[in-house]
Image (cartoon, rainbow, N blue to C red; front, side, top):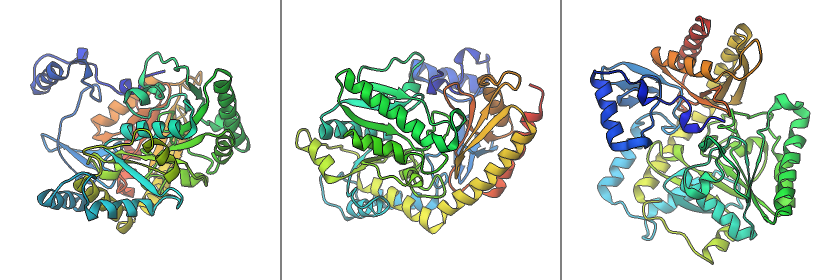
Length: 440
């Protein structure tokens, strides 16, 4: 399995001698050391952004079809203004009363099932998933966790243990079990629900046999790092029922599919008609400002707070609340969920037309503005990670940015800001068609 940081990563050894860019690369490496990670065979340096565009130092515009952190668009003026106004007034954490913090919490909770009425703010999705795992352990009395084969849920010590895609050679800790992503190619559409539920039930039983009480199933409902598996809607219901029968919790990691990303629902889990016990949120909720959250039922949060409690100095500040409120308002008032649906459908149709003409495309999957294009070697049907890397870099040379996903890094990941338009989609489709038509 290819680690997530190795997908489309720049190799410093490939840096040519001379030039401003190469000097900047050396400067970065000297201070970041081995933790310096960049994209593309030739990295990019951006100096400003707006909407779906990133601009380099020479003023060249790049179409961003990758970054979901600026969920409503880079430097959205309403979000920028809200943050700026609040910074000019006061910025305090949640141990002091402030009306904006409470108002944002209420607005956020209005988007989730009614029983999930408590929110705890964090700064990152990693912190949110770490806290969710702690809540599950205290509430159930168990430590057993189930995740998918190429999942990524963050980078704290606890969360890294349940993120197989973070490592080159990942061996599950004793309390963790992995199941294959729900790939419709491996079973019939009708059988997908029961197949995935059976895998999870078997993993629960194996945990119990080895002395690990089952605590939670942790998944993101679009299975982004696994290669994007969104359909058919509803296939998770049998699995969630099995989790609850076993006394465990369902943690929905909504960092990737949440905040209107899938087009048909505000949250990814809503496409499947299920109710999580815990929801985790991250990157997109502040449009780039570091804010994240855990939402759960009071009794689950109480079980943690009775023993250890939780406090985070920077989480849920007045400025973070201003950013979060502005994002919710922009999504609603600019119709970005409907835009994700309509533009996503248009983009998906265009990509499927490419698949009909280019045999190296094995599948086009996803929902709304989160799509995956799986590449194979046509002669053998084997995954084609090298080809995926070549295509991503060829698109970069055409000023179009996408990413990679999947166990082998052979899935093109398309995940633009929610303001992506039909014109943007057509530019992406046209550029990809050109690249696919070139000699390999």
